[in-house]
Image (cartoon, rainbow, N blue to C red; front, top):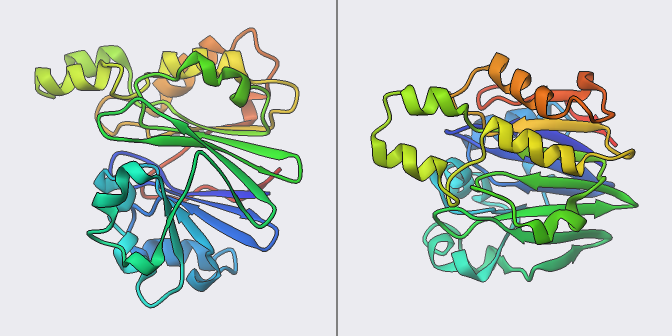
Length: 253
């Protein structure tokens, strides 16, 4: 399994997961040109993409979708709760409704219900005994999922904001309350505490994702997450920050 985070942030989100001959995109928030350019760096054309799994319908996750799939046979995988919104931008022939568990060839995917202000899913992707956990855009993660997300090879985990920066920042009070709520986003400290429960001997990489431009800094993300992970046996060299205008290097697990 190879993973490349093409973009992650408040304006654009997209991740490539390559499992043998199967190429999966999680979301398509950046422009089609940006996604295509980053794929080509890995010798992958957009026609090599088999499916795009959409986590939810906020614009930073679907803005580039319509243009990217134009004149292709790419299937857009969605749960039924976002069908109405996706039908506005994706031809019916390219929509594939998925259950909580589904397969693409020999790739197993389990969708996890997140807690956001629109229907939203994280996921666990498994291929040849390698597993990736993708969790963003949620105020919290239900404890019932802990057994499903513990001791995996790679985590892409939201670490959206620092509480003090958020509360002292310029956002309207109502927006601050939404972000802080159970249907908002995860703070650095919450992300770190969750990772402390999940990271195990198998874990090779942790990517901190969906980092706020206005309510966070690179230094605070690393400082606060590392503090929560201080008693965890993990190589901090493999704790990686993500960006919305700069792709990460592809890694293999």
